[in-house]
Every structure is written in C-alpha cells, then in structure tokens.
Length: 223
Length: 233
Image 1 (cartoon, rainbow over the protein chains, first blue to last red):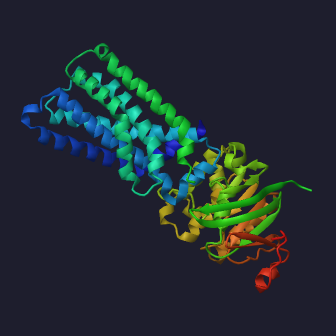
Image 2 (cartoon, rainbow over the protein chains, first blue to last red):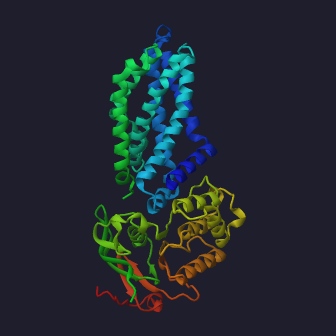
C-alpha cells in the first residue's frame, strides 16, 4: 500500500507542479466541444443526444492524453526502470497509474460537463447529477484501458498516434453504452431505466481493470 | 567459501542480428568487488541491465542470489542497487523528494531521515530542495549513486560510476563503493579504464565485442599486452 501511495502522491505532486496534464485535458475538452457546437449548428444545439455525444468525444480524447502523460513521466531519465527494479509490484504500479489517470480525467470531466451545459444551452439541474455515476463508470473503464495500452505504445516510436488507434475500437461498446445512458440522463430519465447500459459499462470496467492488473507487468517491461 | 552472488552461464544477448554479449561466464562472490572494463558498445551496460533483471538474455542464463534474473521476486530485487547511465530520477522533483520517493518504495523506516542522510553523504545537502532538472550532469550522477545505495543493497551494479564526475565527486563515489564493500556488499562496476580506489581490491574483467575475460592483475589490462583468459576461451 505504501508503494501505491508513494507513486500516486509523486504523480499528483508532479502534476500540481507543472499542471501540464490537467490544463491540456481541459483545453482539449473545450476545443472538442466548441468544434462540435459549431459543426452541429443551432438546430441541434439543444439536443441532449448531441450534447451526450460531444461530452463523450471530449472525454475519450482527454482520457487518452491523461493516460499517456501518466506514463510519460516514467520514461524521462529511465525512471520506469527504477520502479521495475524496486520491490514495487507491477500490478500496484498499474493501480497507482490508473488512480492518477482517473483523477486527471475526473478533473477534465467536471470541466467538460460545465462547458457542455453552457455550450448546449442545458440547465444545471438534477439531470446533471444523474450523469455523475455514468461518467465515473466511463472514466474508470477508459482510464484502465488507456493506462494499459499506453504502457505498450509508450515504448514504440509514434506511440502517441498508436494509442487512439488501439484504444477507441476496443472501447466502442462501452462508449456507445455511455453515450446512450448519458443522453437518457440528460433527458430526465431515472437511473433505473438505464440499467442495461450501466451493466454493459460495469462489465467493461471489470474487464479492463482486471486485464490491466494482470497484464501490466508483461507490457511495461522495456525488454 | 561464500556463495556466488552473481553467476552467469553462457549468457548471450542479440539485438536483431547483432550479437552484443557472447557466452559470458561470470562469478562474483558475496562481499567481492569487480570492475568490467571495455570500450563503448562492448556490452557492459547490457550485461548490468540483464543482471538487474531489466533485460532478458537471448540465451544462457544469469543468476543473482541464486535466482534467475528473468523472474526476480521483490525480495531479491530490493537487494540490488543499480546505477545506470540514466539516473532514474524525476527532473521536476527536488533531490530530497526523489530520494524520499525511492525510500518509500523500499519501505525504509523514515524516508525523510534516509533522504537527509544520503544527501549529506553525496555532498548535495545544500541543494536538497532544488529540482533535479537544474542539476549538472555530475550532481545528477551523485544523486543517482545515492538513489542506488539508499536501501543498502547487498549487490551494487554500477555502470560507469565515475563518468561525468569531477575530482570531488569521484572521491565521494569511491568512498561509497569502499563503504559498501566494508559492510559486506558485492560490487560489480563498469568503466572504460581501471579506476584507482584506495584501500579496495577488486577483480578485473575485460569485455571486448561482447566477450568477457578475467585478469589476474590490473597491470595486464593496463599494458594492453596479450590477455590470458582464465575462463579457458
């Protein structure tokens, strides 16, 4: 547990010091939402379907950036080797990296939700609160997947480009479930009515977190 | 006779089609010191990385504390200190924060006290709260030595520990190596030429194009004459 806390604390300290990830995630979220608002036009700007879709596009982009950055710091000066040589269990390292990516993504999500409400002329009401569990499930699943994949792509040339190519297709089922559940939540539907979509998201969360926990040590090794 | 801390059998490494290490036989006993000398690209760093379990051999095997380095458990990894070309330090953390972080990873009792003690030992106490990115190469090298030795490992693998160091820095690192040997640790280091460390006796190996040869006397290497392999190859 002390290894998990040490890595997470170190990542948060590095982020607070530079602010690189959080600022980049917020800027990217804003950019995506602005582009989509103009692309969709005035007629669709009050559509909850369009708002939910735009929110998830922003989240996926932000999530990829966050996961990439969480492991990027470990490539500087070969610090990843220092971690792998230490008594720290690679699965614990994965858990700490996942937690850091999740925190960065959560901050970006809060910003993205505020921007979505403003840009899509929605109200800050109970429907926004109902989005919270859906976004949390989405963030867990995507962070888990992107953290695992960024350990692979970070070792390759052009890995930044490879991450979306690998991550997005694998995440598509959970993404569809997230968009559908979010649209329903924004339309005022109760959480119970989104049961099937939430079950799909929970299943993918369990799958991605378990896969990451078990496979991380095999993919993070530099050799 | 003490058990070997490091033992390799026909260890070989190939990157693509290029062999980097060939049939390396090496034995290092507990409490012993040895230097591997060789030019750039001779395979010194690769050998140390394999002994640390950070790279897998292409063939043969390496044992550290009697364990195959491809599957080193945490309790064996914590007994290895590696000082590599890369410092493994975080540029945006201060010297103190870097050492405290590693002290926590190694579950040292009081990370702050350990960091403080080691910063003093490598002569960096006055820049403890300076970020590593502002350090010169030599200062980073000294901090890297402190990081590698922080948990007082039983085996120290030092890749060119005197590179980039000025006279004072070299004296500090030499004293740390002497101290490690005195407390019974084994030290395996690499260098381009055999260094002088007062009061320390160590075996000398020469590595050339991936082949390792052991010498009985430092003078054999210094003279550059015909080298007799003790390993029968």
